[in-house]
Image 1 (tube, rainbow, N blue to C red):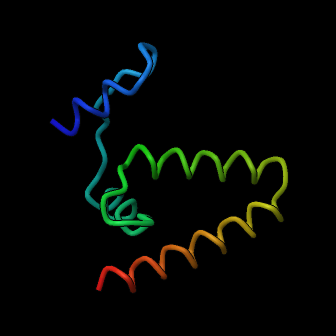
Image 2: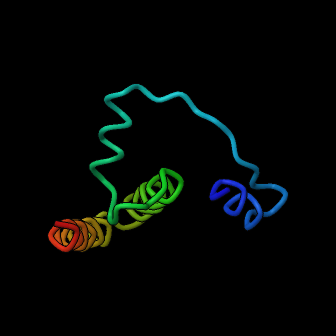
Length: 80
């Protein structure tokens, strides 16, 4: 049901697909979650955004990563 709701919000060009990940990669993505129910789609979008920033302005990307890590740690404390 949740997957269907997410699919309904996507445009016709953004259909859902399946990709294969190793268990290690999946665990690394899990570690990058900013909040418990964050989707892999959201994580990947964030990573791609940071990559694009890094190409244009490495210093801005560094600040963004520091900010995201602080947010992640804060959220982890709140979940406990």
